[in-house]
Figure 1 (tube, rainbow, N blue to C red):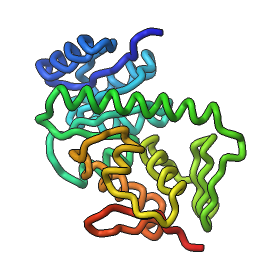
Figure 2 (cartoon, rainbow, N blue to C red):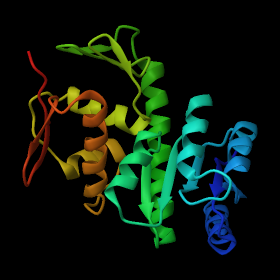
Figure 3 (spheres, one colour):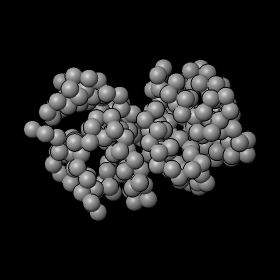
Figure 4 (cartoon, rainbow, N blue to C red):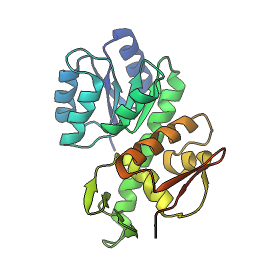
Length: 230
């Protein structure tokens, strides 16, 4: 089996080279580009297993790159943001990013995030292969088709990123149960530490923005519960 191919899209040569070196040392194949339009073309050409994508790029920005790539062939995207701004992160999640990191970041954490994201992709593929065609969850006017990984609300299909879908599906499998952020991180992101609880909050906000605020209840100081109307 060939090593996973990771496309590194970063216009700062020093940062791009450092990321590529670390990924190659970890056993991945890293290919780097520094321009938004080139990134879209290379994603279509190479079909990488994952994209590390900076937001600020010449040509077109990372948000537009993500939007165009996901419209053609959905790929896991780890977005790099220069600012720790919740709005920027929500926009990134909205155009199809699966996770984000704020600069500056440690290479160790970057590699850990990449490994976790690739594990989730593999796990989702295995689950789809093992699932029956009728693996559908219905809650009120919400329908979650796990085999096809499609979501409809009130008859309208709603596009979710792979991470958003995994989050919603896991919560729907545990209805009216308060799930801590740590538990969600463990089961959805495959993380075992609590450093990414803000990532959970950002994804919950993105899911609410797409599906409405009434499906997920916030339990302050604890976590969230999936509580659709009867």
